[in-house]
Image (cartoon, rainbow, N blue to C red):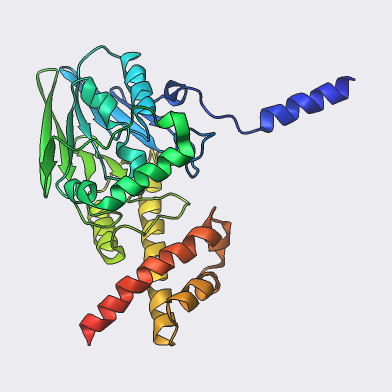
Amino acid sequence: MRPLLLLLLLSLSFAQRYPEHVKETLRRITDRLYGVFGVYEQVSYENRGFISNAYFYVADDGVLVVDALSTYKLGKELLETIRGITDKPVRFLVITHYHTDHFYGAKALKEAGAEVIAHENAYEYLSDPSSYNFFLARKKILGEHMEGTELTPPSLTLKDSLNVYMREGEGLKRFEVMHLCEGHTPSDVVVFLPEERILISGDLVFDGRLPFLGSGNSRSWLVCLEKIRELRPRMLLPGHGEPMLTKEQALRAIEQTEKYIRELRSAVKKLIQEGCDVECVRERINEVMLSVDPSYAQIPVFFSVNPVNAYYVYFEIENELLMEE
Ligand SMILES: [Zn+2]
């Protein structure tokens, strides 16, 4: 009986276990900066939509939060997690971009008194009928986990940049909220802490994974990565996956993201110039990219996400080629 029991216990411990509360994933990054970390997966009923990260900074006169997770319930759990650390008021919530998994929890933080800061283009997203269709699609997957979730608009918007100041000791702490490009989405912003050179990057930088190119612009994204590199971040805190806690790790992730986008763009361009239409690009793109760099095969979801990215980039490149003529 014993070996059987052991086997049973072993297989149970290998089964995917999802956090029951956001606070289980809490990590302290610096003295005052914390993060919670979703699983690196697509949204599913089982993971409750907890697939993205959020961060919060505890200043003397309140808390600044970056991103609000995927549902109102997760937003509430994020708030409870913050309450486990401090009872200071939650004053600001910065949304790095209007994608479901980064802003659907915003209502919970707004109810707690937070000013919701995002890029002005968030209003474009919210007024587009597709934003409501995404909402319905999420409800279909997440069911009761979506209870209470609403499309919360920002209360403060920026176009290029906005500084938030909070009290710290004798002085003021500055948070630079910057719109560097319309790479991942038209509403991309990053949050930079200049003294520590910590960058909270939303979905603009990926470490060992594939970025999603379906709702922004790949050429603009490359501009963004250049600007991010110029900021010389010592730490880079992404919207998904593990935090990059050294400048070497941050730089490597910036370079990897840049390399993928560059190589995808030139592979799509090459196929178009060979006379490929969009379907043909979608079919052949993996083979072309793997001939450029076989290590792409090691990246999770490369085989499914790469053709989708190629589909969107096809229309961008086609437009660029038309403009050149
Ligand atoms: Zn995103």
